[in-house]
Amino acid sequence: RTEFHLQDVVREAVEDCEVICAGREQQLSVDLGHDDARVLGDPVRWAQVAMNLLHNASKFTPAGGSIRVTLAVDDEAGMATL
Image 1: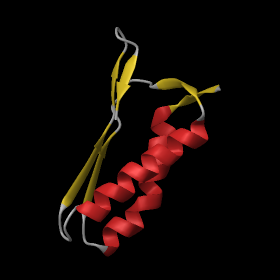
Image 2: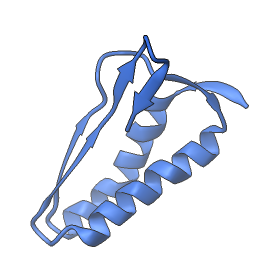
Image 3: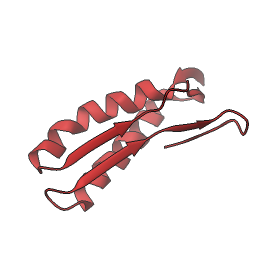
Image 4: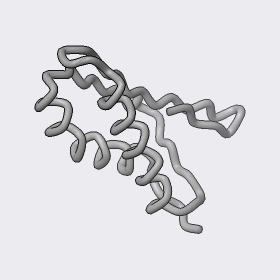
């Protein structure tokens, strides 16, 4: 377990999936927020989660559709929502 920035992991997953979405003419919008989402965990596993979510979104979104990725941080609750 290490501390890492969830925005970095999600941003990298989005960059990897942009080609797939472009090939299906899907619009991919991203809002990673302005708050720092520091997570204590396994960044490799988090990257897999983000990639799986994006691949599934592309797979089940019709060609020409839209996919939106958002990341919100709730500091008081100590939570992040992807």
